[in-house]
Length: 114
Length: 115
Image (cartoon, rainbow over all chains, first blue to last red; front, side):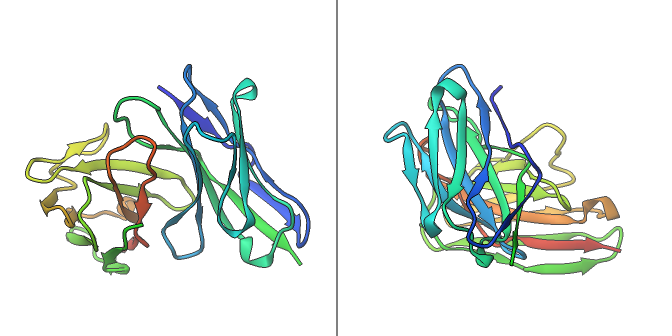
């Protein structure tokens, strides 16, 4: 069974600093990967997805992620953090074949320091 | 993407009672899913709601505790039965079109507290 690991359950960055949230997957075949954001008292919102096209994927709100097969990673980045980026971020994986379910990482809570 | 409405958005219930959560989508969707998110935790899939047939439950979840209906391609309900404090969670409805490369979309969730 495939899985994703999110390193760092809590990440704090200063406003204006680089945001880096880590996600590593385990799969023998490159899967489809997704990043979601959950703001307080809300559901999950899709930030971006990797579906075997371009390895550098741009999403909403200035976020992007790069798929690196050699490192089995799909880290989420944003050049300059805003206060409004404070939220919980989830990486999720699904096999690129079949009709398997979406599997979520444990999440990373991002705090922005003024 | 589809607009997903969940009702109620939150509730406080007494131990031993049951609550039915509704999920309405503004377009027809192939797949509907129900997730549980316990406090401070990630999402756990409860079941896949199949239109016209019984739901498919994940390991650790049973129909008697979490009966699900899906009468058509735009609506589903999840009932949390005989509730205990351990059922205090966020319950999320999610929809997809069945293709692996397409994302699932989520409602805002139902925040349930059991006293």
